Length: 201
Image 1: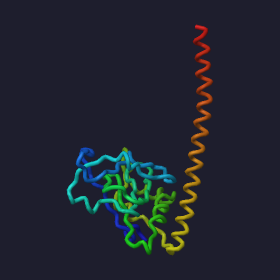
Image 2: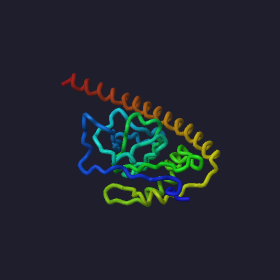
Image 3: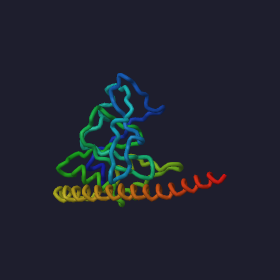
Image 4: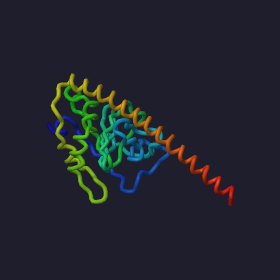
């Protein structure tokens, strides 16, 4: 079945001239710069969001717990499952909000992991367009085929996917630290050689 059959898909608010900040703000705004794009450790930097002033028209776009944000712009269409929202928040035009219609039919966390899977990411990328930067339309996202899986199995798969994602994230962090140590070692050697050369000049 298509994604639009099991979830409401809401476009982010368009900001033609960027997000204007206000001291007497009503809503925070999520932009691409505020997102950790690693699908195995994705999230939002809530503390750095811009704060702006809106009227009541944004009510339908306010983020809710269990919403899934999907990045529309760029080569990676990262999906982020939201927990508790710390303050009234909306997203800009570079996101879509996916809101599951019936959580007794589709488990939000299962859907998030499915959206981040290689098969989904490749399909979304292949069906999106853009000469300078790949951009996904609401129509394309709506037509993504979601597998029909019993709810208990969805929950089980989501738990396993969450565990594996943490393992992958931890390994990526460890690898990054080892690479830093390796690069630092050769950087120190280069610095020592430079000091020795200067001492003879």
